[in-house]
Length: 72
Image 1 (tube, rainbow, N blue to C red):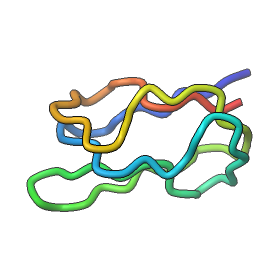
Image 2: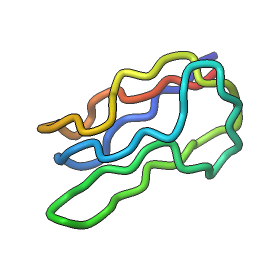
Image 3: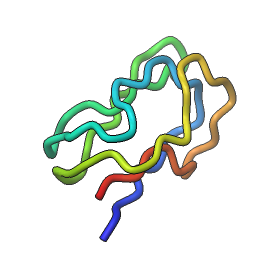
């Protein structure tokens, strides 16, 4: 079963740290958003393999609740 990682706040994607096929552990930082000049880390809620990446570096105007990454 796959798990979606959603953006938690409105802002810009600053850096995506994973690619499709990467193995991650629960708690690993997947991507960092820039929100009002602050960095907001988004961590893996589970251990698994990255199936999909729907965001990219320097992406602007991302809404909260956007599906960013899918882990299986």
